[in-house]
Length: 326
Length: 269
Image 1 (spheres, chains in turn red, yellow):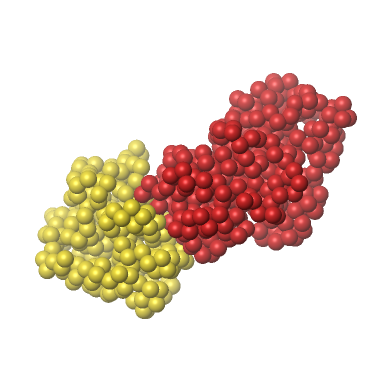
Image 2 (tube, rainbow over the protein chains, first blue to last red):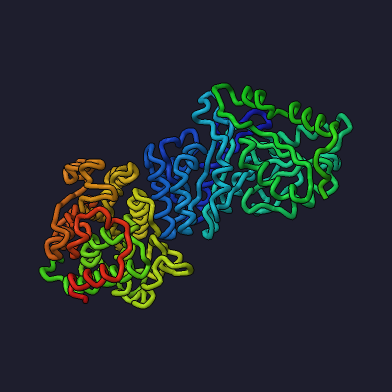
């Protein structure tokens, strides 16, 4: 059952799916062991604790050890899933995750509260760098599911494979539902979630997918037709799909709940930039976060549908400095 | 369980000789810590643990102090996982024998290590996984004092005791000398036995260069239901007089003359 604070009318926080999905996988016979660093309330591990307490291993506030334990468990055939906030699941034990990847250990790491989702806890806890850190690790699969249904299917995909280490970025901020539960998760593709025309291509990661869609709706009302793509994974990256979607567009805009350094914007630029596409990045600038509600943070950093639409409108009204995406 | 003789003892000169030749051929490596730990690996892997036969039934060896990998490669020749001539490729481009243990490249290497402080956590995870399947495969983790300078090691020690993981033995190669100087001057660790005991580990101290005494210490902590630790007092560069307790031999290659003199001293000349 989703926790009350994860459901806001039609909007839902994707983290609601973590515990219940893991319970489902355990019930289906997967040899899952969930590792918690004393944050199970925030990361929604309650269902595991209730249904399969023996599968929830408590390791306390010791994330470096947790990542090493996950590595060791994976060698014995167990499917370890370490769940924490992005800052503590990925950023804090980054070298331990890198060593897991180096060793070919198929650990599953779920990082919640990414980007500005941490809100009032402030700049210390807002992980604006997790995609940059994750993308830099060879062989690490980096998943960015967009909503509750896709979060569940991404977790299931990660547990059921045992070839790659996987980082799954799961939002705390409630978002619209874009996918259905019966869609099988396939890393490496892209999904066109809105298509009003080809003036601009808006590329989003999971926690900005519905934001991008809403911005495209606003632009459409102004007679500016744009196309919105969601990337369910940044590694592997669907380079061909992005190039095809950008074909004929005057502008490619990336929108990410993350620093403009090292994340979605850099990934997409690396793909369409060499073709001469004009790429503009929307995300948090090269600064630390601060205490404020998540909504206030989004206002501050221009991560709202109105702000995104306004910037795209302005860019399309100014002459291109680069070429046109081909 | 207790053996009063040691198969390892007779093999030590040959094992030390392999370490010295490897580091000479590579013109780089970590001779000091390899020579202090080889006696411990020999007893664990030849006398006490199960390291031959079906790889899926063997015990686990986690060399947390991964820079001492020449000692592990020397053991893997002994166990038949590697052939002696390949040792000459250690640290060379294209070799399966990397500068630190790599489970994906080297037959017989079970766990990749190299970042100090991370090995005990991986060993704990393996022990937890084996306990889940009741496999009886014991996990042996060999750490250096540098490993214990990393805070993560203490996270792992705390967690193993908290979860009552008894099928895990940690051996500390306490040679008293880290890269830059004596442990007591770099960052004091003593009283190590008392520290580990207070963390919930059955802990015994032994002379690491006395295979019978060290073997008895392993038996003693394994008989205890708690996770077990043996603080093995060793000498860095053991067996080669000009290397013993000299910090420069932490990481350094050997030239022709040094190799010849060292092999003479260990009876492999």
